[in-house]
Length: 249
Ligand code: FPP
Image (tube, rainbow, N blue to C red):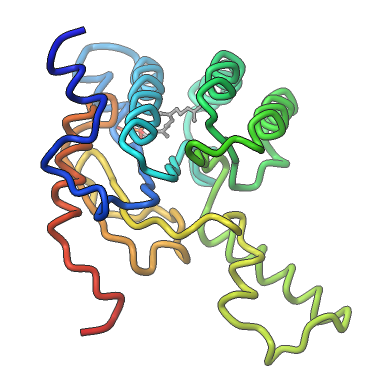
């Protein structure tokens, strides 16, 4: 191992532990463009994207970040060519199967958010297994947004609340932010402190619409497969310069 690699395993000295984000969320964009630039098919970009995600998860754990959430597949991504959608579903399933043992050993808790019931059955089974086997793990909470859409999440929360009102379990004037949060897929997970988007697009793309109300946003031109520890380090340095006021002075 080189001196630089050893150094990157530990929190870099220019970062203040007490100012680290507790929860980092990532929009992993640019896999297709990365592949195109290398003269490779788009799916190779997704494969390399998995490596970048694995490294970021390891890095968050090494540096003491409590939660990482990654946007793997949006409700709009079904509109991609069938071949690419099929590849991604198989990739998710394979990666989960291959990585489960390491996640258990590394004490990683994995969880999924999104409309999981319309994913392929074999993937649903792999998801259930990985969630069950890691549910008591505590080193880091890793959430994967799959078939996820922020608007869809809000609509399903409204429906669930409306049913409770209809059943007389809740009065309309009792509905507050806490009630709403309890009905989101992300219930029990703190809101992201830092949202990172790669590949330079200045968009939220229907990701965690409710939860990012006060998140700091960091956008880099780097394409997702090239987003490594030194890029993450840069994002954290930028974050630590920010003054978070949450609407106050
Ligand atoms: C966006 O890049 C990326 C995706 C739609 C897929 C991201 C998924 C992974 C990295 C795999 C994660 C795996 C697990 C198991 C959680 P793009 O294709 O939109 O890139 P482009 O904008 O350059 O075309």
